[in-house]
Length: 167
Image (cartoon, rainbow, N blue to C red; front, top):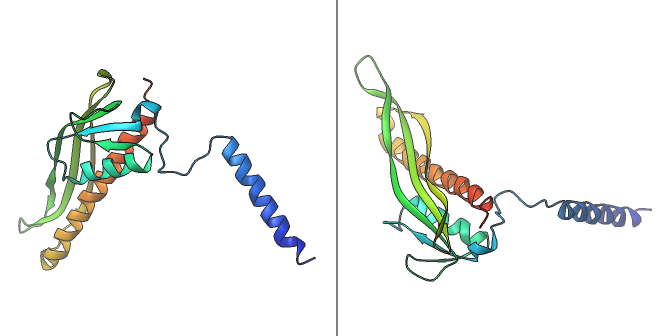
């Protein structure tokens, strides 16, 4: 009886995986891009930004071969502009900042075979954090981590939009 239990569990798991695969289930974070994105040109003014790196990684994970601007590709994802920084949200009675908002904005468009399939559009994400003058180095590092996380989230949003593109 103890030997048949692992077999039943294995059989149950394989049946469950078969049902999930049959219904189109796939793990979150793995985008199913249209065939036109098998080779994607990722064009931006600065290829060393957090967003550019996150998009390139996401496209590669989704099975796309990423090339630079001007190289032959079925699709082109063009980053028209990026803007990021932080703003003061609140100050103390001594006029010292106590809370900041980190923001990241991207404007992009998508072309397939030279035809625009996603007109220029903007996405903005922001997150606030408290500030303590006694821990200025730690707070600077926190701000950089938030910035990188916002870039990853923007890349994920763009990837979700790419999956819905009909060539």
